[in-house]
Amino acid sequence: MTEPRFVFFHKQPTSARMRFMVFDNGSVLSGPSLPVLNVVEEVERDYDDEDVVAFPDNGLVLILDKIGVAKSDATMAFPDVASVDTADGFVPIHGVKFTEIDPPFDQVAEAGAKFIEMTQARQLSATDMEIIRRIYIHAMGG
Image (cartoon, rainbow, N blue to C red; front, side):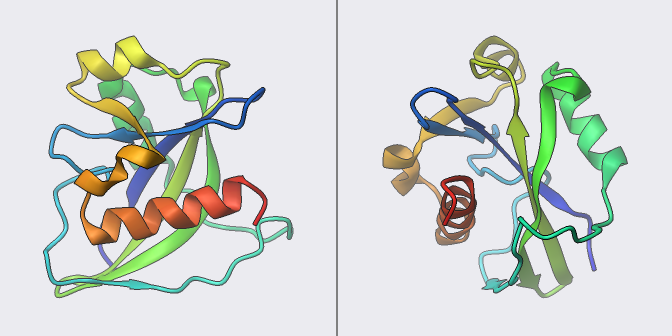
Protein backbone atom coordinates (compact mmCIF):
# COMPACT_ATOMS: atom_id res chain seq x y z
CA MET A 1 0.00 0.00 0.00
CA THR A 2 1.28 3.46 -0.82
CA GLU A 3 0.92 6.83 0.86
CA PRO A 4 -2.76 7.83 1.35
CA ARG A 5 -4.26 10.69 -0.65
CA PHE A 6 -6.83 13.21 0.47
CA VAL A 7 -9.67 14.91 -1.39
CA PHE A 8 -10.78 18.16 0.24
CA PHE A 9 -14.32 19.43 -0.18
CA HIS A 10 -16.71 21.97 1.26
CA LYS A 11 -20.47 21.50 1.52
CA GLN A 12 -22.46 24.67 2.14
CA PRO A 13 -24.67 23.96 5.17
CA THR A 14 -27.64 26.01 3.97
CA SER A 15 -27.73 25.15 0.26
CA ALA A 16 -25.77 21.85 0.07
CA ARG A 17 -23.59 23.43 -2.65
CA MET A 18 -20.40 21.40 -2.92
CA ARG A 19 -16.96 22.53 -3.99
CA PHE A 20 -13.81 20.45 -4.38
CA MET A 21 -10.27 21.68 -3.94
CA VAL A 22 -8.00 21.22 -6.97
CA PHE A 23 -4.27 21.23 -6.24
CA ASP A 24 -1.73 23.03 -8.40
CA ASN A 25 -1.05 19.78 -10.31
CA GLY A 26 -4.65 19.84 -11.63
CA SER A 27 -5.88 16.96 -9.47
CA VAL A 28 -8.26 16.82 -6.52
CA LEU A 29 -5.93 14.26 -4.94
CA SER A 30 -3.19 15.42 -2.62
CA GLY A 31 0.34 14.31 -3.37
CA PRO A 32 2.00 13.47 -6.66
CA SER A 33 -0.20 12.73 -9.66
CA LEU A 34 -1.31 9.13 -9.99
CA PRO A 35 -0.13 7.12 -13.00
CA VAL A 36 -2.45 7.36 -15.98
CA LEU A 37 -3.00 3.60 -15.88
CA ASN A 38 -4.91 2.96 -12.69
CA VAL A 39 -8.18 1.42 -11.55
CA VAL A 40 -10.52 2.88 -8.93
CA GLU A 41 -11.55 -0.05 -6.75
CA GLU A 42 -14.93 -0.32 -5.07
CA VAL A 43 -14.86 0.22 -1.33
CA GLU A 44 -18.18 -0.70 0.25
CA ARG A 45 -18.67 1.36 3.38
CA ASP A 46 -21.70 2.61 5.23
CA TYR A 47 -20.58 5.80 6.94
CA ASP A 48 -23.51 5.57 9.36
CA ASP A 49 -21.92 2.50 10.97
CA GLU A 50 -19.61 2.76 13.95
CA ASP A 51 -16.57 1.31 12.13
CA VAL A 52 -13.12 2.10 13.46
CA VAL A 53 -10.84 3.31 10.68
CA ALA A 54 -7.13 4.10 10.96
CA PHE A 55 -6.75 7.86 10.76
CA PRO A 56 -3.77 9.00 8.64
CA ASP A 57 -3.31 12.08 10.82
CA ASN A 58 0.29 12.94 10.00
CA GLY A 59 -0.20 13.27 6.25
CA LEU A 60 -3.40 15.24 6.68
CA VAL A 61 -1.88 17.69 9.16
CA LEU A 62 1.06 18.34 6.83
CA ILE A 63 -1.27 19.21 3.95
CA LEU A 64 -3.47 21.41 6.13
CA ASP A 65 -0.36 23.25 7.34
CA LYS A 66 0.80 23.71 3.75
CA ILE A 67 -2.51 25.28 2.68
CA GLY A 68 -2.78 27.31 5.88
CA VAL A 69 -5.96 25.77 7.28
CA ALA A 70 -6.26 24.92 10.97
CA LYS A 71 -6.74 21.25 11.82
CA SER A 72 -9.91 22.22 13.69
CA ASP A 73 -11.40 23.55 10.42
CA ALA A 74 -11.31 20.17 8.66
CA THR A 75 -12.65 16.73 9.48
CA MET A 76 -12.15 13.28 8.02
CA ALA A 77 -15.66 12.84 6.62
CA PHE A 78 -15.16 9.77 4.45
CA PRO A 79 -12.17 7.60 5.35
CA ASP A 80 -11.29 5.04 2.68
CA VAL A 81 -13.88 6.39 0.24
CA ALA A 82 -11.93 4.70 -2.56
CA SER A 83 -8.80 2.73 -3.27
CA VAL A 84 -6.85 3.24 -6.48
CA ASP A 85 -4.90 0.29 -7.87
CA THR A 86 -1.63 1.45 -9.43
CA ALA A 87 1.54 -0.34 -10.52
CA ASP A 88 3.09 0.66 -7.16
CA GLY A 89 0.20 -0.76 -5.13
CA PHE A 90 -3.11 0.34 -3.72
CA VAL A 91 -3.54 4.02 -2.83
CA PRO A 92 -6.19 4.69 -0.13
CA ILE A 93 -8.31 7.80 -0.74
CA HIS A 94 -9.90 9.77 2.10
CA GLY A 95 -12.53 12.53 1.85
CA VAL A 96 -11.80 15.54 4.07
CA LYS A 97 -14.48 18.16 4.69
CA PHE A 98 -13.80 21.81 5.45
CA THR A 99 -16.08 22.61 8.39
CA GLU A 100 -16.31 26.40 8.33
CA ILE A 101 -19.46 28.05 6.93
CA ASP A 102 -17.53 29.33 3.90
CA PRO A 103 -14.71 27.56 2.05
CA PRO A 104 -11.18 28.81 2.83
CA PHE A 105 -10.83 30.51 -0.57
CA ASP A 106 -7.94 32.80 0.39
CA GLN A 107 -5.77 30.16 2.05
CA VAL A 108 -6.32 27.71 -0.79
CA ALA A 109 -5.48 30.34 -3.44
CA GLU A 110 -2.30 31.33 -1.57
CA ALA A 111 -1.25 27.67 -1.64
CA GLY A 112 -1.67 27.59 -5.44
CA ALA A 113 -4.89 25.60 -5.39
CA LYS A 114 -8.51 26.47 -6.17
CA PHE A 115 -12.07 25.31 -5.63
CA ILE A 116 -14.29 23.96 -8.38
CA GLU A 117 -17.91 22.88 -8.44
CA MET A 118 -19.17 19.57 -9.82
CA THR A 119 -20.12 21.28 -13.07
CA GLN A 120 -16.46 22.21 -13.61
CA ALA A 121 -15.12 18.69 -13.04
CA ARG A 122 -14.81 17.83 -16.74
CA GLN A 123 -11.29 19.26 -16.63
CA LEU A 124 -10.29 16.48 -14.22
CA SER A 125 -9.01 12.99 -14.98
CA ALA A 126 -11.48 10.10 -15.11
CA THR A 127 -10.04 8.85 -11.80
CA ASP A 128 -10.59 12.21 -10.10
CA MET A 129 -14.13 12.47 -11.46
CA GLU A 130 -15.02 9.00 -10.17
CA ILE A 131 -13.64 9.78 -6.72
CA ILE A 132 -15.48 13.10 -6.36
CA ARG A 133 -18.65 11.40 -7.64
CA ARG A 134 -18.40 8.93 -4.76
CA ILE A 135 -17.75 11.67 -2.21
CA TYR A 136 -20.68 13.67 -3.57
CA ILE A 137 -23.03 10.68 -3.26
CA HIS A 138 -21.96 10.02 0.35
CA ALA A 139 -22.15 13.72 1.29
CA MET A 140 -25.67 13.99 -0.09
CA GLY A 141 -26.78 10.96 1.90
CA GLY A 142 -26.79 8.45 -0.96
